[in-house]
Amino acid sequence: MSWLNRRWIYRRELRHALAEEFVIGEPTVGDGRLSTTVRFGAERWDVWFAGDDLAVDAAGDAFATALLLPAMRRARRLRIEAPVSARLLDNLAVVQSTVHSWDPRYRPVTVDAAEVAGGGRAPAPRPAAAFFSGGVDSCYTAVRQEDRVEALVFLNGFDVAHWDVKMGPSIRDGVASAAKALGKPLIVLDTNIRDPLESVAPWTALHGGVLAAAAHLLSNRYATFYLPATFWCAALQPHGSHPVLDPWWGNDSVALVHDGAERHRPGKALVLAQRPELLRWLRVCWRNTEGRYNCGRCVKCLNTLTAFHEAGALPLLESFPPRRRPELLGAELRWRKLRSNEERNPAFGPRSAGTNHPDWGTRRTGTVS
Image (cartoon, rainbow, N blue to C red; front, side, top):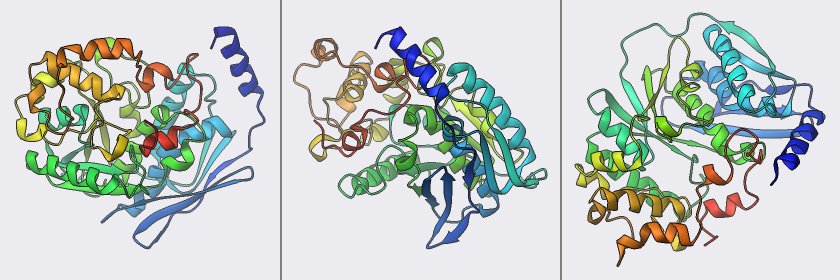
């Protein structure tokens, strides 16, 4: 799409009629879930998180971080019918100015809370945790921070649909096996929040706030959370998880650390090559064609295989289909003209379509080859 067409899209969206309020209802607890109803205009979303021993008193902070950017796209004011910490309210102003500077379609909104909470949870000593999906970035962070991290957090519904009964159980088992190989307990949270959010903006723009929400809901157990970096420092671009953005999702009780941007993908592969027991369970694929743990054909699989081939560790990747001629991996990427989702549709800026691919849901469930 040409720059002129994108300018027209920008102007059209800036003139778009906005709902007066984006309302996050009072959170409720039931059936093992912490849920709320989101209202704006004529739309209604029921969103929830499920897990053991969630910090219910931090629900306002959690839903505020997860839903701030959708509110910036759809409304003039964000109203939260729950207490929100004073520190987070201050930090959200920085988040808004940063995101707006990346993409003017995200308009700053007034944030009102039912109650402004005080200093947050008492600063009792609490350990650190890291978000973990079993991919290259999260495995690298888990290894790099092995002495600091006491647990790994897997968010089911983040990159695989929570209702996907075909791949969900096998992926969860694989992630649990990888955590066991690292000697760390795995905390599993379930959520449906991705389903409605994908109708608003690219998931690559929104996922950082959702990870922050999960961190707030576990703030009764952990004080620091490591978010694995997607890009290395020489290739940074505006993204939902970014070293400039991530720390501002925290409050007096929770600190979020963007981790791993000092190494590119082949560099991470070199580190992980020293942990073959972990590489048995490596998972990078989000298509899972024909029910495979890693399809070996999509751009994420091919980029990973290429990185480990360059690191001389390709035989350690037991979770991928075998390759007869690995030296042709780079040529296959060029010949098929494959590009990552971040390359095709950046999270923010003039090259971003501002929404997800129309068949994103079917791609995520592996029905598109």
